[in-house]
Amino acid sequence: MSRPEGLTIYIYLRKSRKDIEEERKAADSGASYDTLQRHRDTLLSVAKKERHNIVAIYEEVVSGESVTERPRIQEMLRSVEAGHVDAVLVMDLDRLGRGDMLDQGLLDRAFRYSATKILTPTESYDPSSETWELVFGIKSLVAREELKAITRRMQRGRVASAGEGKSISKIPPYGYIRNEDLILEPDVETAWVVKKMFEMMRDGHGRQIIAQELDRLGIKPPNSKRKTWSPSSITAIIKNEVYLGTIIWGQVKYVKQNGKYQKKKVPRENWTIKENAHDPLVSAELFEAANRAHSGRWRPSTNASKGLKNPLAGILMCAVCGFSMLYQPRPNRPNNAIRCVQPGCKGVQKGSSINIVEDRLLEGIAALVSQLEVQAEVATPNNTDDISYKRLLVDKKTQELSELNNQKSRQHDFLERGIYDIDTFMERQKNLTDRINGVEVEIRNLKSEIQKDDLRNQNIDEYLPKSMTVIEAYQHADIERKNALLKSILEKATYLRKKEWTKQDEFVLQLYPKI
Image (tube, rainbow, N blue to C red):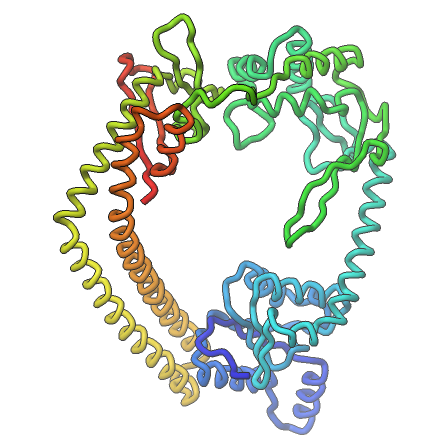
């Protein structure tokens, strides 16, 4: 099998105990023996021959079999896991680690998950090939079993802590703080907020009203990324038994399926439950009353017996928050409305008559058709010339890339002849590699633009007749047909009407066509 060439790589150097002994013997005999220098020269020669781009050289100055004892390999593995390079070049596979099974698992995971190859002067190891399994298979299996054993012990520790009434979640529940013994204590700044939520829910207020009231009072939500309270946050608090003084652990478990972790609910009989673990924030009576009121307010979101009422469903989005605009029938008014109901848009985004919005949308499609007709008639020759110019640029950049690679090869020559020391070589190699990567990015971008231009020309030919068909058929179609017609040519449309805009037709509609 041929070895890969032209990769972006790290070089890793480490002395083994055997190397240290050899150096000691050479020193005793008066000879000079520098293991890292010899290995460096060998690996640089390999990199030059195979035209690899060297990003960094990691030299381990401390001795240690375990990964945890070697800071340089830890630093390198973090970059490997982030996918910064294509391969790591080492003298031998065991230079990366000959520690315990946990070390083998760390190495296996870093290289396998990032698809980073391992190269030696004589071998090439690809995580996606059978060779990788042959080399790492048995050791990885043992390492995984060890990790499972560690996980089981940690899980038993968590269950035991929960059984003792300790809070072991990442952050304490809203309304509580956690002391040094992991016991929850009421937070004087937020505990009253929790009680207020339960009381408002018990008294018949819905989640939306509660969220708006908390926002009005200037109370910050638990999620620091949000500026306003959401109804789902209210539900999570109302249903959480921690406010009764109970610690619960094991309500969900994570199962890996198709390479991704899926969250699955666990039956209540399998939970770890510790009552009276800490001071409750609400009484049992208040908790039950609030939850009865919460469940009693639930309504199904749609009625299967009724058809679609909103022709813009799934198309019209709020330009402020990105959520879908809500259709609102108004039996006592001439026209039905459409508006955003998200708490953060209250006082910012105003609604409009759906008839006006629908007409503006059709006007926008008609204007788009006119633009495409003009492009199809007069812009095609210019567009063709533009594509030809970009292809010429690709050829020019490809030639520039070849020249840069030749310069990189000459830098290796300067290092071998002693004109460059290793620091000068790495500095200039890095600069040249950055230029090479920049040119490669420019080539990829140009090719991508050429492909998009070709596709755009093709789409215009297809999109024009489809859009014209939508305009012709729309007026005579029912609601569901109208919605399907719009979705056939639009990804979405965004709506913006600021609170100071007083006219009904004073709003901005942005169309996103499927071109």
